[in-house]
Every structure is written in C-alpha cells, then in structure tokens.
Length: 129
Image (spheres, rainbow, N blue to C red):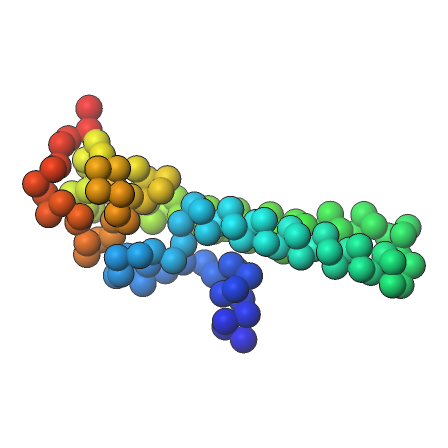
C-alpha cells in the first residue's frame, strides 16, 4: 500500500531526504505528481461520464482535483519550503551563492545538496551577497 501512495506522489517528505545524496521530494517531483494525478482524475472523470452517464455531475471533478491534486501538492510544497529553510540555515551550502534552493542543487557541480553531502567539501564556497 505504501508503494501505491509513493507512485502517486502523496508522500510528504521527511528527514530521510536529507540523509542521502538524492532527495526524494524536489520541486520537479511535486510538479510531476500534479501532472500525474491531474491526468488520472481527468481520465477517470471521462470514463465515469461515458460509462455511467454522469454528464450532469461533471463538476464533481473539481472536488476530486482539489482533494487528489491541489491539496497534496500544496502540502508537499509547504514541507519542501520548510526543509529548504532548515537546509539554508544549517548547512554551509545553504549560505553559498551557488546554492539553488528551488532545485536543491549546487549550481557549479549540478549535484543535489543535503545535510550530509556537500559537493565541493567547502572549496568552492562563496558567501551570498
């Protein structure tokens, strides 16, 4: 059951994202989850309208989009921003001008940054201006 929710990107993100070199929840995974869940809701709505003659109830799909697409994406985005604030405050990379918080990467090395992984080991560090 956990894999099902993981595939649909309903995961919230946790500290395990910071323990590895490759975080599981990034801005790209949030956008991918929105696209995937939106297409599933649209396909399911079209199927229900044709199969069960629910043409007058098509507007229920807006509730489904809110419940299965927008709200989980909003929650993931909040958690992602909270993690990026902590990462920016607690790590050397977070205070570097080459750190891109939206991609969670070092722009010089194009590598994901975490609490345990600093790509340059501090040699290319430059303070933010």
